[in-house]
Each structure stands twice: as structure tokens, then as C-alpha cells.
Image (cartoon, rainbow, N blue to C red):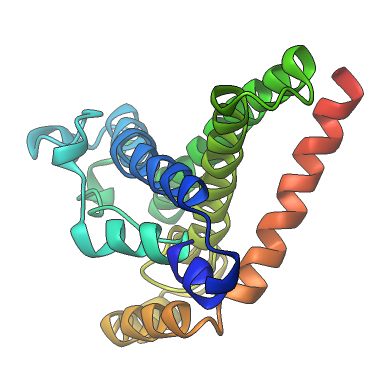
Length: 226
């Protein structure tokens, strides 16, 4: 996001910057809380009240925000909120790995749903206002574009099968327990490695390509409708 603008400083556009900042702020304060709420809600429905007792069964952004993860969303378009506490032993499912996977996948699914909704409104703006060059119309269009893009980024990023991301909880359904604990010993170091790869752009490029693929698939669906 902002880092990409800085790398292309010659194409700097203050209006584009404001729209991107607004979209990033919207995601940080409105959609990442829904991502974390989704985790807490599924855990609650499966019988684990840990998140509810910790005040995390809410869409209040200040219950979920992680300022480092929020900064990453502003800078690179990928980031995270404060992880929801879960005690999978409290869940009603016998297979605790499956319970953990269901709780984990709820977050990325919520991002994809929000991306789908914002993209729908983007196509509505395009359909009814077309090539209208009014600043409000074009700003609304690109705001929705960036909100969609960031939500897809977050879904793709969180589905990476490495700890502490949600994708690792899904992967561990298929791994023996001994491998789970072997990998989790290095969770902190893996987290630092992921952040470093994002800030240097090494991981950002393949993630953006995957996100663009999902974005284009969503667009193909709406193009059929509109």
C-alpha cells in the first residue's frame, strides 16, 4: 500500500493517497474486528467461552486492534489484529484439530465475504455512474476497490499454512500431533520472519499475485451479473 506508493514516488497522487489511507483505516477499524469476531463467534458456538469471557465476542475495534498489525495494513496491505484467545479443549467436537480448523477458517471467510460485498457496491457504482469523472464518484469507486483488495489480501495472507496464521490451524488437521508441537516451538521466529519478508517485499509479490487471482475471479462473477 503506502510502501508501493513510495517506491513509485514519481506517480505520487495526493488524492490516491487519501483514498488508500481511508480504505486502510476502514479495514483496520471495521473489517479486522469482524475477522476476529468470526473466530470468537465460531468458538462460542462450538462451546468455548474463552473469547467471550475475555471481552472478544464483539465487533468493537479497540477490543481487537494490534497496532503493529494495523501499521502493516497501512504500509503493505497485509496485517493482522490481536489473536482471539481460544481453548479448543472446551469445544463440543471430539476432534479438537477439526474444531480449531473451523475456528481458524472463519476469519479468512469473513474477509472474503466482506470483499464480495464491497466489490458488489463497486460494480453498482460502475454500473449506475459509469465513466463519471466527478471526484465523489471516482473516490467512492477506488475506495471500494481498495477495501476489496485489502480484504482479499488479508484472507490470502491468513490462509498461508504457517504459524501463527489461520492456515496453519487448517494444515495441522492433517499433520500428526508430534509435528504440530515441533513447528509451534518456532512460532515466534516464524512470525518475525514473515514480517521481515513482507516489509522487504519478498513475500508481498507472490501474495499480491494470489490476491489478484481471487480478485479477478470475483470480478468475473459480477461481470456476468452486471
